[in-house]
Image 1 (cartoon, helix red, strand yellow):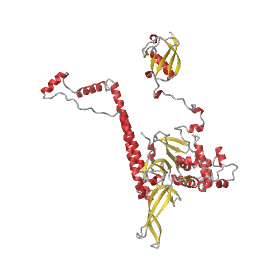
Image 2: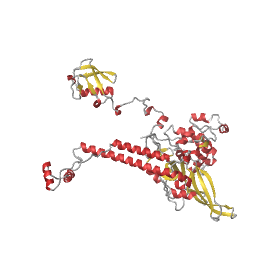
Image 3: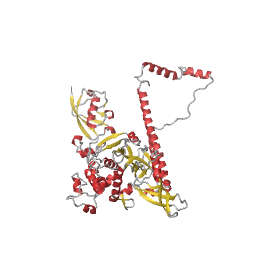
Image 4: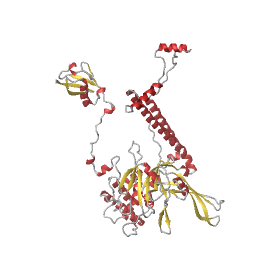
Length: 586
């Protein structure tokens, strides 16, 4: 074995290489691949002659210290960029770092004694990223801090030591901020003790003791939801597009009703029209209610009793409420609990009420809003269909390309694992389908003349076909054009209110469920749809928060929460507005 030291020039660099003259050019290329990342098929080696894979290096005339040249660049797949940050293994990470990894299981909340109602509500509200962002910026107002001066430490100081909320007194917003921060730093079940302490200080009804005398009583999740939203409305302030101060709740959870009230007993009495804000929609459940849409209609078209100025007595009125401003987040409360005088407790309506993963609420909007949003909604649906068609075409194209490659590479289109009899039948069928005719061209001409035919006619032109890349580019350009057209349809009034629902379509993001026969007993859980990292699509899975237990479930599980018995049934549905698309040039 004769080894030589040679030099290899490549892209301005000189590499020292030890070669064996008894080897071939293929082995030399592998050596250079390890030094330069240039794959062997992309290499061109120049010595006294071009070195090919089968070239014996003994025939090249290499000597010690000789210099040869390598021409070639690595392909995109082989370009390996050095990591900007030092690789960190899971065993070296802190609990907080592990909790923030992509795909990490989120933290559950421990049940400290009939607190599942609060746990389910907290997990569902946490599904609103804008709320978490706004809470991070929140600081307690000076007057609130002074009112809670019984503590030796400030709320911020206590939060730094993991016991936020203790010094907050009645600062429920600060307690919520600290709780969400602590939940984001662990994957274990976390005890929300400080938050619950503050909640009970501010709202004594949640401090009611259990009838057994041990611990606290079970409560209604909808009540704690409503109280939390009420508190956040007063504490979280932000600015709108015009730079004016506005409650965060009004901006993201707040809608507007236009309400028309007409007297049934005196049709000639003038109807009254007024506006009213809302932070959720109600779904009333009656004997004939089978679907969410029907329950919403019942709540929005209601009968009320009040004094009639024209009749001078109590009269029946019809009040029709229609939405004039759609919020970005739309909670819907299914009214499953009602007060029973005989048992003196909140009973539960067990009726099955189905709901969808996506809803269209434009039928519940007033005429003015409908005119502004319907063109946008229709274009969104048209765009979605086009995107789905493109995706299906890509999959079909990929499948056909794969089948073609398999056909070209294989000796036949018959699978090798087919039974011999089936294989024989397939070959016989293929043989029958082949065209039958004379084996020689001269014989074919004779046959044509005998039949009164003519010679083959030469084609007058050629047909051109588009490449896959051209087709893909045209499709992408079509999608971009449709998105631009959609954005051009957005009404000027809607553009000024970017945090409002712009499309009339809403997708389900969270569900609070209840299992049992009454609000004061049973068990509450929450389902929250998994989010995808930036640039990736969601996988359709959901997180099921059952106190400290958290597990992943399929979307089909959500469809079993319609009710119909004492099993888990939806109580609060959290929908998020389908947003306008972003335009990225093809």
